Image (cartoon, rainbow, N blue to C red; front, side):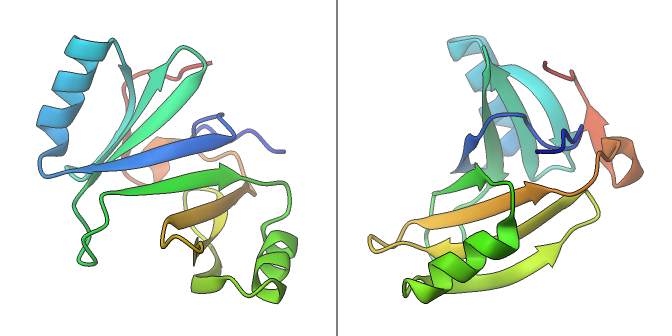
Length: 137
């Protein structure tokens, strides 16, 4: 798997929605000891905790969802094909983004949203608007 400075290195990354991302980041860093890794505008932030990561997102989403799970895979297109053949509800087809990730979105049998992501390039976050707070190892 390619390392990508724009993406946390964890294999599984929860995304939790808060109405105020800035306040959530401040609270999570103060109360729980998370460290801010990367800020993306006013609506996203990547946090690290030991070797784990969390992404704080603006929310809830229009569907009412308050969380998603990102799972990093070696081949997103093969994974997408497997999911589709298994009858999973594909919410967004595979797409390559400027931050160096190829991703698709799917809903599981419980209605939980998963984003499967493959790093396809090592992209400096400042090239697409991210503000680096700390590059966690």
